[in-house]
Every structure is written in C-alpha cells, then in structure tokens.
Image (cartoon, rainbow, N blue to C red):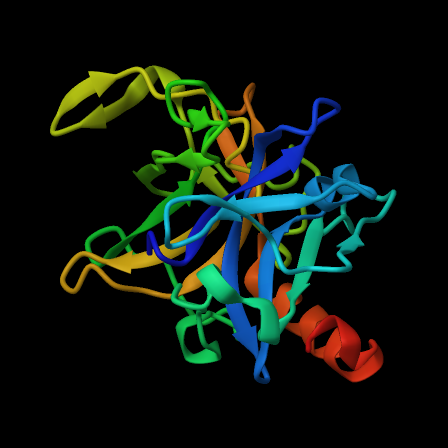
Length: 248
C-alpha cells in the first residue's frame, strides 16, 4: 500500500513545495488517476502539484487539470478530488502501484466484521517530523501514518450530517491510539485528507480500498471519508466527456 498512497505537495509563494494532502493512485478503464479530497484540489488553483517519485525526489505531478466535486448541502457533499495523469509523462511515478478496479470496493460490498477484518487509514501528515524536505536536492523521505481502526461505537452519521450510503466514519481518538498495546501520541492528521481507507482481513492482511479520507471530526473523534464508488463513477464520466489531452 505504500506504493499506492502518496503525499501531495503544493508549491508555495516562495516556489517551495510544501506538504498539504495525500492521494491514492488508481486506474479506471485504462486511465491513470490520483484520487484525493475535493477541498485539496480546490486549493491548487494554478499552482504546481508535486509528489515523491520512486527515485526519492520530488517530481511535478503529470497532471494538467483537476476535478473537484463539492455541494453546498452537507448531506450531498462528497468532497471528491480527481487528478487525471498523463500516461506518457508518468516517468518516476510509472513504477508505483495503481489500484485496479478489482482492488477497489466499487459496489460497496466490503462489510466490517469485528473478528474478520478492520479498517486501515493510510495517509501522510504534514507535521515537520513526518515530512522533511531537502529543498536544494528536492529529496525527501516522508513517513506515512497508518491507523488500524474500526467504526465508532455509536451511529454518528445523523449527528455529523452525513449520508451513510455515501460516507464512512472510522474511529480516531487521539487520546487512545496504541501501538503494540502501548499508548502513543500520533501526529496531527492535517495532510491525511485524500488518503485511503482500506478494509483489511486479519487473516490475509489484504483488502480493498473502500473510501477516501476527507476530514477529521475532532469533537466526535472520527474521521470522515467518501465512499470510493463515487470516485469510480466520476472517473468514468470524465473518461467519456473530457478531452483526451488530459490523459495522453
């Protein structure tokens, strides 16, 4: 999964790429995409997006247009961001694993079962300890954040004004995160937006991508995410209607 989920960097006013979000690489109908949060794409504007290539250096993402889908009604807000990638310019990104449709829970069939599976959140926090950049060399070694978690104890969808058919909530209690049974202080989750949520089998330690993380609801101690099937539907629409130039 480390080869599928990447941190995204946005060029600031000093022309230095700064970490600001995460993304998940996927392939839909032969087209290459980076899926992320819609509010992240909205921040990009005319600035350049960067990500670490397999060579360990920051490289400009081969993307000439982003698509953000937002809605004023919170019940309808899917907060989706799709970045079509130029196949001919993948270069240092070409060796990464782009999830195929068989590795994605498009039909929403993955079901949480306490003894059978768990949810894994994977993204890249923006805190300095997690993402240091050697700017002269544009070299970095970002540290991913992986959280094994479960649905919240209570059904919070109505309280959080989210449609359960379109979103997923997972438990994120910063005061009770443990590694090997010991409590730890996790990094701040700013930057994890756009990261992946997977439904992982305890037995095989594998499972499909089920959602893209959008925002942490601190008061409710949960992380909200948009179900992945809506990204696939939107990607197929873009494949049909957008200019081929954004894919070539």
